[in-house]
Length: 373
Image (cartoon, rainbow, N blue to C red):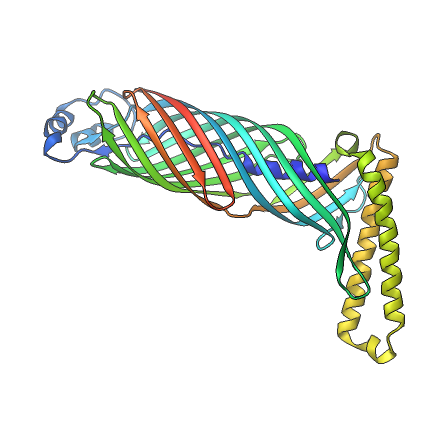
């Protein structure tokens, strides 16, 4: 069971959809008088962006209107999952909340993305996303049941790491404003990631506000930009899927643990029954004791069903499958980012960025080529 949980969580990491930092800049200052005059007098040679001629006539310096970026990306993040439902061989789905608890869910991914883009308006960049990702998730979980004192005890613990590949497609928009080399960019993108083990592509939304400053170098059109900002990931919370146990189940390791789990469930049930039988009629009528007894029986019953399903799958691995659904979310949706870009000329630029703080760390580097359209 533990391996299919990893597959459903690793899709969170496929958010490598960032872009090269270019922007329309309002030239100001006495040292830029000649540049401002030349922009106002020149005929804008390209079709895009819309209102490009009006923007240059007003003293705005526009980037080349189209481009292609290639980015390499690495990220690691902690996740929280709940509302876990599990079924075996297309049988009834059982709620595993309280029973199955995760003490570790760390997902790691590396990706290569290609992003074509255009400036639709001088203040709005629109882009597409195509990415290929290698991801892994390391997860640890335990099965917990109550004893006669209604104190939960762990009867089974396990951990695993699963690797897989996925493909991402999406689109994004970046509203920007730039004055005197300073800029504000609000990068937003929407993407769908196809993971073979999931019923449907997973949806993610990334929001990355950035504020920075561009510094011109001695050579024409050469510059260095630096920025700080934030990175927020939101993803579709529901995940449903099905996997073949012959592909993911560690039979040798789990068999003994399942047998031990059966014995501990039986012992706990005897303790709970003995505790309840030892209560007086008045004590059994107490709502608090009734709630404890009902909760204990419910969890012990679900623990037995879970162990039975795993045991049956172990004994009939070929053709066995497990179905699951869960809700997931990043432990911290926000983290801090800082980055820099070296522009060789208006056509070529190199970018690097790191994200940290919170429970997510990310690093990216990429190259962008721009041309007029």
